[in-house]
Length: 216
Length: 88
Image (tube, rainbow over all chains, first blue to last red; front, side):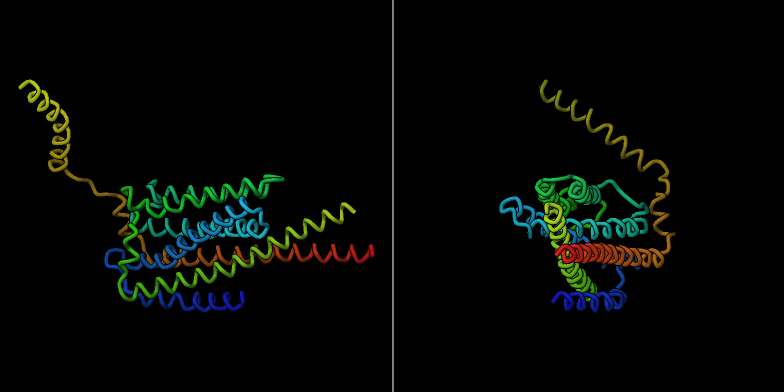
């Protein structure tokens, strides 16, 4: 099943450049606006992953389910990966569109803070020692709580970043290319999440085997 | 009457600097915004390609890291199985 998902993601990604090239140019920004087609879907997936991690973290805290813990860890790692894409492609667009690599405005700053929270999750889980799963699940929940602030920051505060009206108001040509890229990213995310959850389950099983053999 | 005079005085104290600032903006020369100049001169195509390449690099790098960790776990599992079979 996951091979099918991965295959579909590969097809969509392969066709994405043609979809993006076929989309009309934006009137004020021109070619540089095409970064939108991989910057925004990456941000979208980052938000989805943060929600998956936070909700799985809550399930782990409530039920102590091992599977929920694996999903929390896997999704948190993917927040860092897709967040890195957002934070790398955004400044390249900003340099051309705004003339600066970075601005300490609400949207950019809160996104960076959210990304750092999930980086902190990785460090805590790796080096936190016994019992760090519980604390890191709480960190994932806290990271998830940042998502509404990241999303609505452009509407609440005065920022240089475009508002949330951009996607709903996309014209023909742009709309299809955008949702194609979102579908490609989401399918890839599903495949990566499944792979990472499986790896986490195997790693935990290996640790338990080591413990049992060591005890013998 | 005194209240009205006081209120007018406060309003004048607050508004005067704002009016003076607005006056200065329209009177003097406005320098070129360096950010706008940079934005106009930078070539867009290399930047779009760099951003696209970075996306691929990050994703390929992550998939490579996943495979490396998977291989390490499978290797350890095989070694453990061999050890358990050896004991048996």
